[in-house]
Image (cartoon, rainbow, N blue to C red; front, top):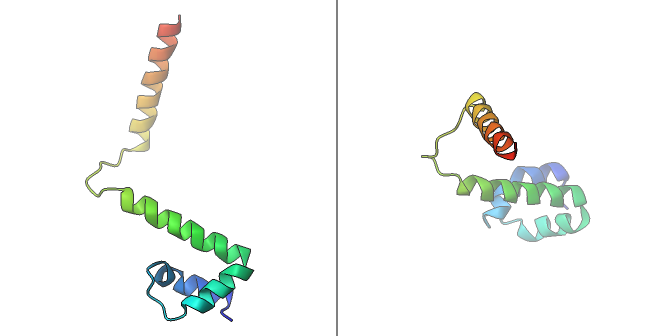
Length: 80
């Protein structure tokens, strides 16, 4: 059976259906909750990363904070 370290090493290939150790990987995942969690988190990370487009602008934390403060001030003024 594969070790947890081996599972971590080939997890990406497993998600790509690109490993000859597929049945061994499945067997390990059936018995190991930590590795199941690791592979699931890797899968989620890959899905989220795929949704991010490269031409999106990355905002600086100060810009985000400034925008948030502006919105909060506007809401506060409208409630007065």
